[in-house]
Length: 516
Image (spheres, rainbow, N blue to C red):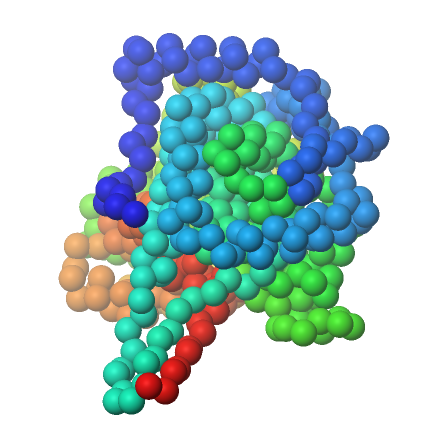
């Protein structure tokens, strides 16, 4: 199967009048569909339930985006049975046939790109550029993983031996559980689902309860693309009732999770226990967040560094596992970088995500709002509040971008993942101290260094312990195929989503030898 070389999906330039108008029309089109109901999808059948999950617009908290059916353990059992029933036929298809479904899905997403972005604006509170980038990344995952499946289906190299014919190839694991997060409700949901699927597995997809409508739209696209019945089973439901049940189930072969460290650790522990009748060690892929730092050296371009901190800290309201939540700046330039960041932060416009002028939208829900505001209160006692600090949840869940200065590296707001628009400035004595501060965390996801000194950059390359390290650019915005993404330590299993090794987490190698 000949396919063109992979290229990342271009982003939409909303400064162009035609693109701006098209997005305005997409928002109106989506708003007209508010309140619709979406069923479960099990074994190729729509299944409704009396219980519903209601999805609200976080910017207008009483506005219902839609409802989805709420699964029970009985539905979970049905979905797992359907996944295993579909596994045999699907796993025996050639990789080219499985990849073709992904390529068709990518084409459908491309045609519906602005509509899908509009759903993200309303259900996730993403600004226009953030929503557009999320859809583009979902398309990238479909295109990239389809190509990786074709590559891995090729003969694998083995050392020849006289008198034998030997081969090694990869086979899929079985039926697994996919638990994506709400913060990249199409991109990560798509990647964590279609990666295992194109490798020959079948899955139960349990979307995040904050963004289930976008998950339902993904399911519609996969059905239109021709995914066979039972290969992807769409199962929105509560984590304790449905998620925990499937994680512990003896017939669940693997779990692909993205979310908080606390939930990830619980999944890792649950999956490690062998259940009666279980004949395998469950494979767990977990991406569990970060406490990411941008280090600024005296040799840096300070304006670029300040821009990078602001974009990395406050893009999508800081609700990214890769967001900059620590700015570690060497003493000689600390005050100047802090001043520049404060000035730029004050210029950010907070507002409704469907307003194209908005740069910072709402956080996802009331629980997130309250958690972030608690951390801001803690920060008032641990640092000097220089900008922000206010929250307003009367209409939606809005928090002003917040900067704390003079924070100790061991302070709570310098150690715990806040997942909101809050950044702690930490003063380093010198570059050695800055690297030590950057590594003084249980996480190891992303980081960035701004410096012109090549010796310092090379040191950071060796000594700054994160899965994704960037020089003289922001620490967010990993591109599929360009920046394989994943972290170490309590940031997860470092599966490197969007990289050439990712599909191997959902496959196992088999060697066959025949005497001639």
